[in-house]
Amino acid sequence: MLTPARCSINTATLGYKEPISKVIEQVARHGFGAIAPWRREVEGGDVVAIARQIREAGLSVSGYCRSSPIPTDSAATREAQYQENRRALADAATLGAACFVIVAGGLPRASRDIGDARAQVEEGLARLLVDARTLGVSIAIEPLHPMYAADRCCVNTLAQALDMCARLDPDHAGGIGVAIDAYHVWWDPDLAAGIRRAGSERRLNAFHICDWLVPTTDLLMDRGMIGDGVIDLSAMTNQVNATGFEGYAEIEIFSTRWWSTENEETLRVCADRLRTASGTSA
Amino acid sequence: MLTPARCSINTATLGYKEPISKVIEQVARHGFGAIAPWRREVEGGDVVAIARQIREAGLSVSGYCRSSPIPTDSAATREAQYQENRRALADAATLGAACFVIVAGGLPRASRDIGDARAQVEEGLARLLVDARTLGVSIAIEPLHPMYAADRCCVNTLAQALDMCARLDPDHAGGIGVAIDAYHVWWDPDLAAGIRRAGSERRLNAFHICDWLVPTTDLLMDRGMIGDGVIDLSAMTNQVNATGFEGYAEIEIFSTRWWSTENEETLRVCADRLRTASGTSA
Image 1 (spheres, each protein chain N blue to C red):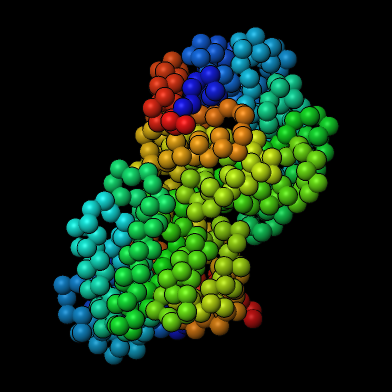
Image 2: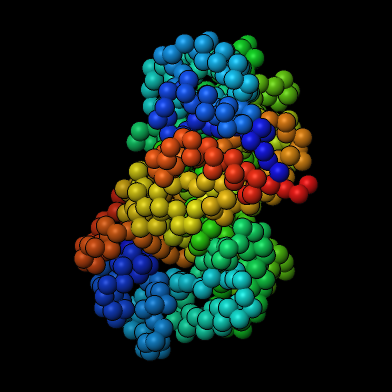
């Protein structure tokens, strides 16, 4: 069974409606073991102080969200986005984050060439990987659901992300892996094999959970509270645990409904649902 | 370049707002070479007369849409849905359809077991394949976009559909293949390989085209007119043609916008766009 102590709250779940200092305090008070903040809450603030508050609250940082998009139609934008990602990586190191989450980006403006976008992602990550190793923070490629291929992320399956890791890090020197988000990959006929592979290749950096609602009324803002949808989170948690994954299961829910709920209530429901919906008798 | 004469109009594109007899006349008058009707337009009517009208209008039938869902939580429903599909297959034979399109169905009510749903699909298709061979109509498994995995179709990649064909028809006796719809598979990193495989295994029964809009505002009813979105239909058409596919490229657009447009205007735009958006210089 997942317990709050073995789980993390991705702050996106709370809709960024309170300052990060208050969110850290709330997450810790509800008994969660970790937090995953977003750049919008950190950049422009005192990163060292935020890191200290998180640490003193007894929380780990399961990940830091997330990269600027990589594919672009101009060299100047490419360089600017790389520099943004490099600075964010440094902040991830300061935060002691288990990984920096890569949401790769979609098609450049006016492009229909998804193969080119994917090649740009790989090239951009090769450069960022050098920084990741220097800073001692792993980058975690997050395959996003295929419905985001055009406008958010052209890495759309776990196999694709792992293949990319294999090409970028053929010698297993480390510094790169994947973030597996149940929402994005639950449908994949090759999911179980992909989780095993991520484990055996030692590239499972993060495990995100939420649920797929039926019906889903919005492509972005209608993700479900764990237990409210059709994903077999129990089976998936068992598969992830079977790889020896020692990180936190991180709850990340983009949802108009939950974003308009008080943080205290959302955190209470998250903790309750962990016990009932994602559990395993093992 | 695709021309109307080498293309088919799936009647879903026109929103079923005119009787099939009128739609047949409109599609033929605009110069298209084929039509793909839906059961809702055919069942309860005089199938033989519809088939005759289509033939006399000079149209081929590129496909007949579509199966009742296969996975279910009760034996009685399973039998009823099989009988529906068997009757529809017989109508497809009467229509002279190139294939009967299988939209497999999603999770049974209250189920979180997508593996079981997929097993039910395969079992159901094994039974239906016997009828398909008897009737001389091929069934075409259409992988649907992963965003429909829960509620419409648990077959979600071309590789998955082709693997299913391989298990159901290991000796290549025929009667089963796939329908490749650009909207559902354009994002797939393995798409080009999958199209080649469908061709070399002689299982490419249908090729559907429309476009993916950015942004997409609805999961079902916001598909794009060819040329209005980000799918490289030209490249995909070339890949399909390179397999030796001799069928029709079938335009199928579920869209609130186009369904509220006069059929004459929609057909005119379809014909125009074929020349500009899906063409190839080859």
